[in-house]
Image (tube, rainbow, N blue to C red; front, top):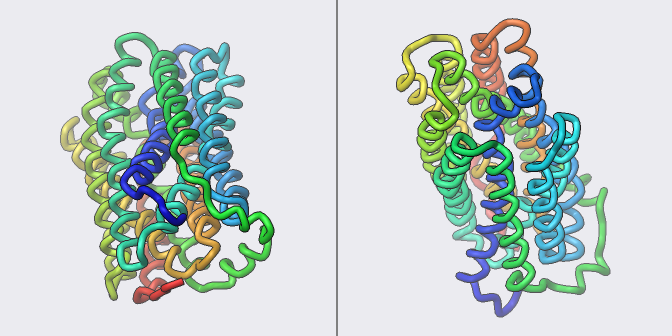
Length: 391
């Protein structure tokens, strides 16, 4: 993207990323109230998260090659428009089935935004600064969520969960307009070089992506199980209101921002695999302690916040590492990492809901630990020193 105004471009991309990510992470604090309105259990209403992640996973597969072939701007503009429609319409859903469909649409449209945004950033950032920039962007997204999600939670407590969705639908509409006005046009010659399956064949043949997919899916199952059921657990165990749950969400989001920023730096370490493995295990232990032991409200908040922060390190690190080896298929590579995030989200929400219904919260905690053990083994054994890529 020659001649790009980098500061303005990074602002527009950040707004896109924040808008999409928060449309997902704003849901868990609202689940309990949604379940009460529609008369369903916590484990059933938790499947709204599963529907969102399912749509996101499909988009993560499709959008990367389209972005690499046709350009970043069309993906950014169309994805934000459809996501704004999905989130705003969800505020008026008459029943759980309609809301489930609209959350799937939200995931399907939003899933193209992170890989497209990350690839667009990598297009204009030098190789030496890519890891730090990716980590910083992920941290900005998390810290923005630290402000916006608690505010939306308070709005839902003050008025209704529908008002929170409507408010974020308007934010997404603003993001669409900003991208339509200022997202730069890319290289139009890419249209002549469209390919889909060949990009995936090349990337999936690499040992890095084979190990990264295993490590990312398993650790994201633990992360999303913890985040999806954190507020529900706190409300059930300690009787706090939806408004009071805004503080734990804020604290957890801050820790997630710290973890995301650290991930960019860890991606460049020579012993990055071992460091990530240790952090994943520590995060899994926090998840087990959070769900399995009644240690008091604020101690539980601390465990969930530190645990989710530790589990936030790997995803931006993997995204940064994927840009080292994916060449001209950067959006496809980032999309593969995004797919693992959504598969982990589906697994965390669905498996967590099943375990919660059949056994209890302690089973969710043991699942968190088990998944982080798998992740730690994959990343510790197969993710080695950084690969230098200058293309």
